[in-house]
Structures are given as C-alpha cells and as structure tokens.
Image (cartoon, rainbow, N blue to C red; front, side, top):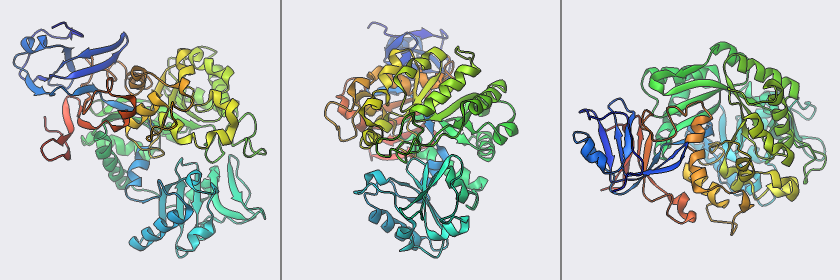
Length: 555
C-alpha cells in the first residue's frame, strides 16, 4: 500500500504509545491537505507519526485503537467565542429562537415562576429580526408578566439589551437620560425611553447587576467544556475576559480542569492588561494562553450599531456607533503590542473595519507585524480595503454562520452594493489573507460543523437559498477545514504545536461518523462527533452499543 503521509519522529515504539489505525484521516499542512490511515501517539500526548499500514509493523507494541474506517480530523478550534456566555446561557433564561415578542414574554413569565428567589432575571438570545414586525421590544412587554423585580435580557449578538421598568428605575434611566458616547437609548416617537439599550448604553445597567463570583465562572466554564468537547471542539479563542476570569482559568489549569485549550483575549487595553502585565503562554500543560487583547470599535449590524461609512439603507439618519477614533485605537494597539500582546479588534461595519486597518497601518508602519493582529468579525468591508488585510498581515477572524444568519436582514440594512464586500471570504482568501473561523457562541450555536457547512455552501441549515447566498464567496472544503484548524492555530501563534496532525504536535483530534470530504455538501452540518481526543487522551465518546454520550478521559 502506498504511503500517503509518513513522517517519523522515532524508529522504535515504547510501551506507552497508542496507535489509531484503520482510519480515513485528513489533516491540513503547509504543503496542502494530506491523508493517512494510521496515527501514532507518544505517551506524552504528542504525535509520533502519521502514515499508512506500514506503521502497524513499525510500532508493533503500540496499544491499538481501531477506528473502523471512520474519518479522523484535527480537533476543531473556535477562533472567536465567549465561554462564560455559553455556560451562563445554560443556567439562565434562554430566549434563542423565539419567533415573536409574545413567545419571548411567555418564556420570561415561565422562568420567573420557576425561579421565584432570583433577585434579577437575566438571560439572552432574543432577536427581533425573527419576529413578524421586526421591531424592538419594549419594557412594557415584560412589565405585563414581571414587574416586581428587575429583568435584563441581552440580544442574541450581545450588543443590545431589553429591560423592564424595574431595571430602568434601578439604573436611573428615564426619558431625559442622555445617550452615552458609543451607545443609544431607543426611544419612541414621543421621545420616551422604551426599554432597549444599544451598545455602551447597556453600561448604565451593568453597574447594578450582581457580579458573578469565581465559582459562578468555574461552573459556567465546566458546563461549556462538556458541551464543546462533544461537538469536536478542542480549542477556543475566548474573546474578551476580565482579570477574574483569567484567574479562574489559571486555577482550573492548575487543577487539571481544562478539558480543552483556551486562548484567552483580555477585554480592552486598560486595567485587565495592566493587571496581568505580560503574556502567559502554554500554561497548565499547554492548556492556556493569555496573550491577546480584545478591543471594540463598533457595534453589530442587527441592532444597527455597526459603524458604516454611509447611512443605513433602512435608517437613513443612522451611521451606527463608532466607539473609538483611529488615533485612540492606534494608541491601544501600540500599548498592547509593546507589552507583547496581540490585538483583536471587533469591527463589523465598513467604517469600523477601515478605522481598524488605518490604526494597524499606523502602528505597524505599513507592513505586517509579528504580533499577527486581528480583526474580529470583519463582516462588511469596503471593496478597496479588502486587499489591506493581506498587505498588513492582519488576520480576519470570521464566523461563517453569521452570513447565513444575517442574510435575512443584511440587504435591508446596507443594500446590495455594499454587500459585495460583506462576508467576503473568497475575496479575502484570494488576496492571500488568513481567515480563522469560529462561531461567536452563544451568538450562534457552537457546533463547528454548522460553520463548515455555511462556509462551503453559503446556505442555512435548511439548505437555503438554493445555490447559496452570494455563493461566489464560498470556501472549498479544504479551506474551510483549515480555517477551523491550522489557520486558527496560526491566528493564536500556536501553529508549531496545534492545528494539524503532524509529528511533534499535540494529538488533538476527532473521529466523526461520515467523511467530510466525500459526503454531499448539504450533509456537512449533519456530521456527528463520535470521539474527541485532547493530548492523546479520549475526553469524549459515544457509546456505540447504547448511543449514549460520555465525557472524561478513558485512554
């Protein structure tokens, strides 16, 4: 049998080695996609060799695990997500998928009844774009079912919040409260505050919310870990943590509780950055890196907070919300980079993206930087700015399912001409830019195969629209996989140890129930993870006899 991919780090086996064989394996590499049928793992959890059946003779003493012909891929990395938000969603009020304000209010009422001792009712997930009138809800809607205690509910994208009157009173928000810089209080035709706050206006309430404890964070992270490893996720870039969350991650790493790898991005270049002082790399047996800073330059498209060069097509007086000037952003980037931290800047609108690119061009003196600075989301880009990503070596950290979730409102917001630079994966890749893919969970569902499906088909999970939405921006299957693996690792300065199944790297991989490269594209989102391995240990598997799911190492 011809050897498809054979790279050996040692010529003799040791008793501690494990071999996965009879596999249909694929891995991206710097030289393209490689295939293999056998994978040898050292007892320290790193890959020794990848190749074909010759390895069965070369490593006769290795403990063998028969893959039974199933497909093996590198573990998938979500390159932009929110771990606490995902865990919190599982213990708070979840409004995801509500199809009307009436349904959302019904869920609020049920949650209030079932949680009578909660001082605050908090939750997330409402999206007025999915409702018949597509209008923002109002405080009075919640007041009809909960008026005795405050309610604070974040929109699905996290850039708007819906309050009841009790929460508004606690925050001191009334009809005369001024809009803060970078924020907006939604008002009705008579100028009365309605109960919805956009972007930095949410800070008026946040100061009054009960702060999570370290134990709250730890419990939320644990819940998220269990869910994510079952989906084949072995690494997450956590986009915006405070110093308390960073301390919890370090404590969990000390206690060997990090089931997957965390690349944490500190929230803003201020107190959190000053407190941590210097990057933390490969902490806790290489489970934790804290070497990036997350900065916001604008809001989101769905709540019309994304900063646009021209007004919104469906709100001609509104350009969105720009939080920082180019000079302010450049100062923050310069500070973080000097301290050894990469910067990832949230930018969704074409004005927001231009501000980031202008700031990075200034800081980087017009050339790529070894810091590998990033733009988080990069959703709507002016056509003339697309080539600047590759020219400046700026990574586009994008979320494929945002395109298929936003397609029902994006054209209304900005029109078809500006959408030529929207969710422009093909245009970016063709200029040589690196795309690191993620989901932005809990904004989107965390299943990475939903993202791979969207990247390849430009369709939602109902395989609509036929032929794909702006289908010429689709990725190939190999490009999409690479964006969730090797390029995600590159975006975190981790490509020397993660992102592909090559000798010397960690044995982070998954077994799935069908061949990603051979099934029809419309089935990619149906792929099911059978096993997840991190550092050569199985941390999740499906019990084939009973169909049950289990987490925890057993190899």
